[in-house]
Image (cartoon, rainbow, N blue to C red; front, side, top):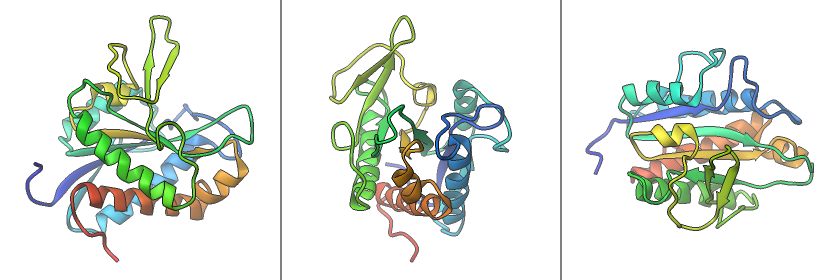
Length: 213
């Protein structure tokens, strides 16, 4: 479906610049930048991939629609947007991700990528939230969040990066940065590297390739 390698894979680090994202044990923008750098290094070391970025610097503040425009201009074949979750209850934990929603172009292949991601994080021992780790989010008329765990089709917009993506795409909520155990596992220096390896192996699975050893 996507031809022969090298494949163009874009990595989008959520938030950044003047937008810190969620704050908890760590800042979301710090976790997304560190994980993205680790993942890009893995992709750069593999001749099967041409790694792409949604912006030149993590210090740049860019809206999701602006990042999506920059992503589409590079014609990637797959997009991963990395984020961190948060909750007022410090005990809330687990992994979830958001493919392009049902009824949209590229949904099926986005869901397939999401399933590889959930397999990887689940094998690590992370609790999978929603429907085995896969969820869909929309924004209503008053910008309220509408969350679904099924394959029902809705006309409301979803996350901006997914809304405008022109290739299969998944937004990954790597862990709860408000949960110290989640941070130890997936958001400190070792944890970001651990997450990057899961992302890399899921990308390889999606393209039906063996990861570098």
